[in-house]
Image (cartoon, rainbow, N blue to C red; front, top):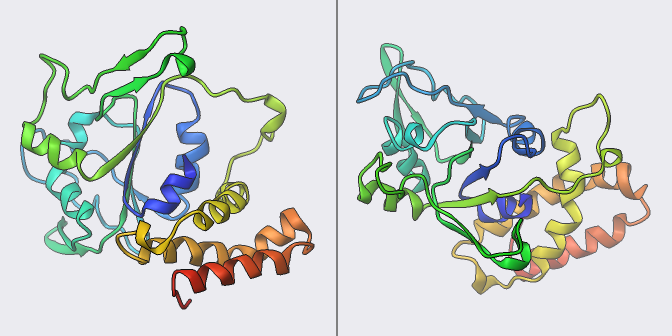
Length: 249
């Protein structure tokens, strides 16, 4: 799932059961460079709690563990603008300011999309269907047009069962931090990029973003995982990717 977040450069929903690691494994990493938006208390219009979108130098807007109604309510136009990579105007105290194009990351126990789970992956051995909370009859909270507009701009990762995880695989009495994610995803992100071609991307900014992150964190990877043994090998693979995508960093 983390690889998808790295490669798409778009808006991500992370939804699913409670207490399955959404906050521990993903939000703790994202908040290191993200701005958490406090939910608006306005139920109809306006921007209660002005200053909620003062993002400073952060590169990600994070909506933490909120319901679909919150995201598709007062903030729906801001979210749609951010999704189009547009500069967004927000209210800040007695004035206004602009929010540059940013990533948007949203976690929730509710679903924006319908999800179909095949029998071999389901929890009961039978095909399972999980309906969208905004499409369920009698529970629709926003217009069909706005739902479709937001759905067209998001990817949703749905965790329908608790992942198998041995206690020994996680540090005890510690926290899962950004560098842990980077180290765990480094080789997978590099290998995945090598499977793509230029024509697979709408914009070369997408592979460039991932490549810049890999190059920046190469020294950390070598120090913590490889012990400088595979530095030249990783550097060679990164150089080949830069040539393939015609990217200068």
